[in-house]
Image 1 (cartoon, rainbow, N blue to C red):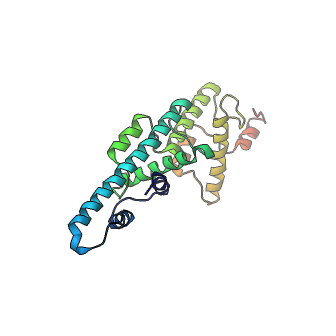
Image 2: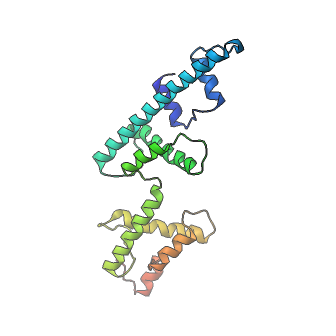
Length: 213
């Protein structure tokens, strides 16, 4: 088993535990399946398992260091790395979040308390979608405090991300009203409504005598 092969298996979420691991590791190292030598076989399998675990930990630390360096250079604590240059690291990030969910549910996982602490020490975001929502809500409140309403232009130069986000929420709301699958929930609709979010910009524009910013 080479480090490269281990990395490929790690990226697809392979779980290095259980009987299947003992058999595969034992066979890959040429361990004989002889009942008469069960003690020797057990010792060899245990040794090989430790070797794989050590190599796995090293691979994890290598990816961790890459992530730490990337975030240090780009000044951000969560990101979606979609470029081919960072495809391996992107897959690794997704997997850490998935394994963390398993860890919280007490399911079989590669995540450990030590890994959680290491990731959180560099500001790793376990739920980037929730974090983005909270950030945009705060930005919307700040916009309202400054402008007196929540009518953020789609092409808002001061914060293009907020303008696109507001437009997207309206799109999700229309899907929700039609009974289609949507990312917006009743809780999110209530949260936006409470701060004066305008769900239909054009109806609001008519009521304001067509004064569209």
